[in-house]
Structure formats: C-alpha cells, structure tokens
Length: 415
Length: 201
Image (cartoon, rainbow over all chains, first blue to last red):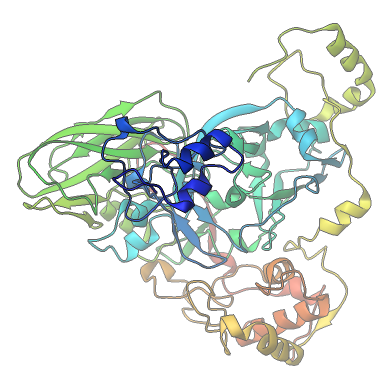
C-alpha cells in the first residue's frame, strides 16, 4: 500500500503482477497504487499526482469497501448476505447467501454428469457440454432460504441489521436450460407426477418436486451473473425453481428421477414444513409469498442530520411481479406508494425508494409489498395468528426500523 | 427464448438424422416454444443400468427399494454411541442448532406452532420411518457420509425409533417391518393451501 508520501510497500509491488514489466518498473519507482485491502485503508493524498494501478487479472473492491457475508462456521449452517451494503437488485456472486447441508462440494466439471431416469421413455446421461449445447435462457430470479427471518421473528433485537434480519435472500442473473427441454428429450411416462432432484454433495440432498414446476419455469443453471456458478451455489449445475424456497433449488445437481409419489426426504418432512396452530404442519409449501424489507435507513446506520433521506429496500414475490410497495414513516398510520425502480420482473428482487423528509422526531419506518396476484404482505399480528409463534419457515410479515430523535436506527420486529 | 431463427440446410439435415429418435418423442411431456427446433437435440447418451444403480439410493414410504438386511436395538445402541453421540448427544438430546435433537416423545399433541421451544424430534414430528433410512444412508455421519452399511442403518433406525417410544426394543427392522412402522407425526401434515391473492394463510 502506498502511503500519503507516495512510497510503496514490497507487498504492493509484488501484487502489481509479476511479469508485468512496466508495472514492475513503476513499482520500483514507487509509482503505483494497488488494490489489496489493507487496514486501515489509505489513499494517495492527491491521486491526480501519481499513476493509478496497472491493469490486473482480477478486479478487487476498493480498499475502502469491505462487504462480507456473515458465515456461521458450520458445515450445515447459513451465511447471510449484507443487504444493507448492496445497491440495485443483483447480488454480487461472492456475497450470495449460503446454506449448505454437508459443506460446499467441490466438483470437477470433467467428472460431472447428470442422470435422468425413473419414469421416462429414455434414461439419459448428460455431461456439462451436452447440457450447455441446449438452447439456453438467461433470467433474473431471487433465491430465498425458507428459514429467512427466523431469528428476527423469534428473538427480535434492536441491533439487528438487514443482513441479520433477512440476509438469506439473494438475486441473480441465471443462465441455463429449461428443465422442460430435458424432460422432452427423456420422454415422461404418463404416470410420472413428481421428480426427485438430488445433489452430489456430502448431504446428497434430495427434494421431491411436482412435475408441473419442471414443465413450467424450472431451469438447470450453470451461469451466475455472467460466469460459471460459484462453488457455494452448486457449481457446475444447480436446479433453479423460480420463486420457490432455496432448499428445493438443489445445488451440485447430479440426478433427476421421475417418480409417481414424493420421496418424503428429510428436507420435505422433518425440515422445511410449516407448523400451524391446531396441531398441523403444512408440507410442500414451496412458494415464497410477497415480502419486503427496508435496507436503508436500517441498523447500524445513524442519521446524522434532519432533512431528506431516501427510504430504500427490496421487495419480492415467488408468485410473480411486485406491483406495489408502500412505505410508512409513522408506524403504519399513513402509507405512501414507493417508487418501483426498473422493470418489474417476475420472481425477482425489486428495488423501491421513497424520499422522506425527516424532521428529527421519532419515526417508525415500515414497508408493505403487493404482488400481481393481489397478495399483500401481512402484519406480524396477522402472520402470527395464522401461523403461530412456533412456526418454522416462510417469515414474510412486515418489519420495521425505529429512528429516534438522535438519528439512531434500530430494528423493530413487532411492529 | 430464442429459437433458431432460420431453418438452415444444416439444421434440416440434423432434423432428418434425428427422425428415428424424434418419432419416439410423441409422448414427450413438454412442447418446445420454438417450432423450428427438432423434436430432439440428440444430446447426451443413454444412461447405463450400472450408473443408475450406483446413484439410485432413494427410499420412499413404500420401502420398495430397501435393501436386504436387518437391524436390532442392541446393535444400534452400540453404533449410536460410536458414530452419532459426539454430535447428537449420549441420549439424542442434540446440540442445537447445528446438530438437532433426535429423541423426545413430547409434545404428543403436535403443538409446535404454539411454542418454538418445543423441539421437533423423530418421535414427535417425522411422518415416515423410511425417511430415517433414506437420510442416514445418504448423509450421516456428517464427517463420513455414505459410510453406513444396510445392517448398520437398520440397527440405528431400530435404536432411534425405540428411544423415541415408536417401537419396542425387541422390534427388528428390515425391508418389511420398517415401512410398516406408523409414525406419531404421520397424520398431522397437510398440503399447502396458499395460492396468492388477497388474504393470508
């Protein structure tokens, strides 16, 4: 790292790509900045008075920018996307949330294959090149973990950030082949009503999916934001069920078996089912209902002065397009339509914005999403009455952020 | 979705060459949205019986694909202490949230929605006994997945079901007895009745 006098460290000189003679010369001359994150980050006092960094094989973030997932450090745990640090709607691939059940599998693409069998006319095996030679599509969709929001529902705390409240949702431009095309190649037998999707990870994670979803908009994806999937997102191929809970979008996909009844796998019985009042549990509850969260202002942000502040956030629905997001700054007494930014894409994150003139008094910020089916995001009271305090998945009620007179922003999970 | 916009001579040849396979596609489930596409792209190859068998490990509630072998409570008790207790506790009490509790008959009224401290277990929640076989076979133990032999899995299932008071300690688990076990949670599961639109369920 160059300091303010323009000197440069040995580490910085080495990082300026070995073999790049010009860069090395510049480095010896003490004339290049570099992008290796350092703490504390520094910058030349006047960047117009010395050359910048040479070109590089891989880009890095500014040394002043350090977004990070919040991993839990276990093989079967989640890692949360820092929603409050993101702009627009696309989640950078290295910040896409994680939820693994036996760690993130490393798969050699040369060894990878996909077997389709069971109730088909022609059991088929595809390698990666086979799959990528099919006509592909590119679509933007979110994936949300069914457990997203559980901690905020059960134990809301003022210091919770959007990442901690709702960081198990991410939005991506995916590229892949429609599953219906592969079904067409294999030829479904009439008695096939479900398919089992199975991963090649240590959990050999498996989910039973109704055939209708496979014939509708399901994809087998290999592209994530313009490049191959990240390891943590199932490289080389994952199942993508647009709008459906993340667990069913099986990563490191290796097998599809056409079947005539669900397998009743562990993750569709003991987990990913929704306890309901009256001693029941909802099963195969795949769809993500409409939901929104304000990502700014939100903890840990502090509003340092009164005046105009944008209230920004994300809204999404697994049942189609977001058609409306309303924002309240007074705890729900009055609502205003927020601006929806960009074209509404089905089953994708939508960015919303509402300009708010903060007077410096206590406020409670809420957001409420409506989707194209007419479904309106419920209040916590409505949600809790229908599902119970002990329900386990699909937490989509309205959450809020309190702003006090000093501008401190805290999470309000019981609004 | 972009189709091949022009039916070129080359794609015609491809379509003709694919004819034999294309005719067999009359019963295919999905129609291409692109009329110029062939009925088959002739990609991939026939899956071999051996590669299907190697991966076809799922066990559904009929138990039809359960392997030969049998397991007992006593053998399962020893195996549990050796392979499972380090994470799931000596008595199946678990180390939540990473390592779930496995054993516990309470609550018997499936009142989980009323209180999130009521812990779901094999005995009070899991609707199918075959799921236990399927899951242990594919994913457990966490650090040695896929290492258990059928007799070991049957024994662990016998032990865990008996500890959960679902079966007696004298019950032997095999391809016939396991699917016949009626789990306490079985009749508490309902289909998803949400469908979007106004209202909340």
